Image 1 (cartoon, rainbow, N blue to C red):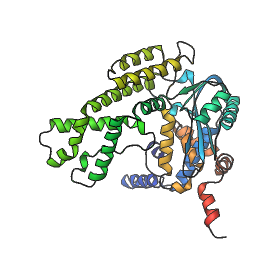
Image 2: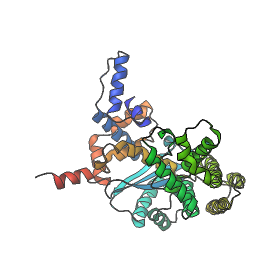
Image 3: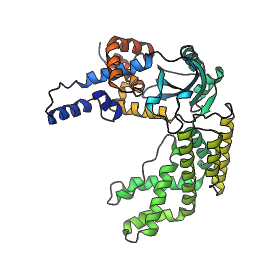
Image 4: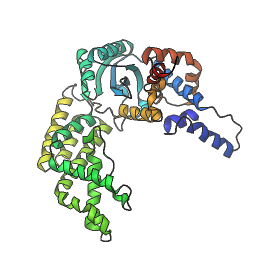
Length: 392
């Protein structure tokens, strides 16, 4: 139960045992509550078990890979896999669909190192039909060296298209600046409830949804709510001068959301490409038409990479989600850097049935986890800090 609570919620390692203790007390159950360190060890063991159990050898593996950076210069390379024959193209992927294949930390990654990791992986699992991920230069180079088809993740690709479209757009810059100033100015005022949402600093051109959604709501407030206060009027009047651009931005945003929904649920195929073409036809403004042409070019070039009549997995959102969950785990102690807690990423893929959890905890030892950490993680940032700053 504790393992499921930890892996399926955002509760911290200390909070889960406390919640369990409260449940026991409320239901008058005589059951000893494990400590948070015990729970931590259980997650390590489950992650190690999932990562190291024997994988099927087949000729239709698809890998999803990415590297993430934390405090310090260490980067963790994570590779998930799924058999093409086992993909359910009626919904997005979930963690239980995936098989964790590799988790390795290094100070620096390059194409040659990634090639070596994937080449070693092929010996274990068989043929890799194609890989999905962002077009990071190291990942791209490593896959090119092995002649593995690299599908550019749709979320990252569309962000690049939007960056090209809006990077030098004066109206877009002015709106985001106005929103930022409004947020700083009014965050502690009596009308703080209308302030814009916080914008992303990284991947800023993925902000288009939160920007257009808030702007549309603010426009509706200004045009339709007759009872709004004078202070709201004074602080939102600037938005009226951008009405035409906001409506165009909202149109682009809605089209992109609809396209991503089709492709992330159903994959890319001749049929879904046709569906996306009909959605893209809704773009009528000049900026939208440019975006439409670039998205169509991306879909055409991607579908030509693989044999006809094949559905293509076109998103690596699941690995971004895994990194997000992992970073939430370590957010309370960022100075720890990359530790063996990255095994939690592999643990996310566990089916969490009692039989599998029991087997994972019984066959995996703490020593196994320590050996794996020494081989694939090395010294953590906190260990280096202690060695450098603690007195001898």
